[in-house]
Image (cartoon, rainbow, N blue to C red; front, side):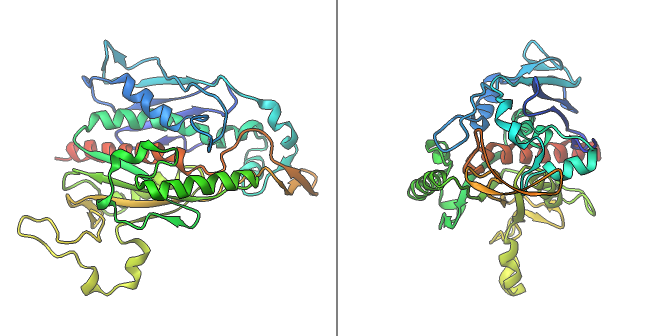
Length: 353
């Protein structure tokens, strides 16, 4: 299986399966002498871990990272940083009923067709549990670039949207509720809706907005390695993501050029920011902001049609512990992937200066 590494200079390779002994990763390209805040890394993992509230999967994992290399006396050595996160609460028996069945909108069928074998326990390598390793790498990337601020939040669940621009929001409120929405009135509506969906045995999708501030001018490498293209690739690599837009996004397609152009101020900043902080694939110093769309979780705790390995359509029902809405737990994953992209381009930019 290829495609387990992300990055050019700041690189992460992940390994492991949902129900294996552990998941983990190797971070390459991290410079030496960086003081590591281990508590900050663990805090990020806690934001992503299962079982953290009543509206997410109740799988209980401590998600305690163990570093194996690349850090000595609290500082990075410049050598590869190896780490593992043990799996401690697998319930593989919950998945025995899908051993010979392919669930709709899961990776079951394509994995078996491509590789001739699949780990049906929790989805194996296709499980979103793999993203915990990304959070470790993202947390370290944030510490490499402390002046750059990355804030993601849930901006919609189903058809419930925040109706305010991000500039009107207080990001410090994002962690004050289980939905991770900084608009508290909207958060309450979202939470109630997720609870209702869960009772029905169904699932729901939503969107996450991410804002990156204090980015220097000049990050991004045209033509094929544009900054927004790499952000898009990073976000679309996250499980359940179905869409990505930055700046004015699809709304910009409805506008005239006279409406959409970001007029300059004398200091090089712009009066508006419909470009989303990126022009010509290069950061322009303004806020970078983008939105990521997540589909509803495919596993339903209600009866539905599936395909078995003999070509029969069969009835089945999801078992085990699943999220009715994956979006709240995906907030730190979006931040982590954004941090890795920015760190990668930051060091790439310095190499060519």
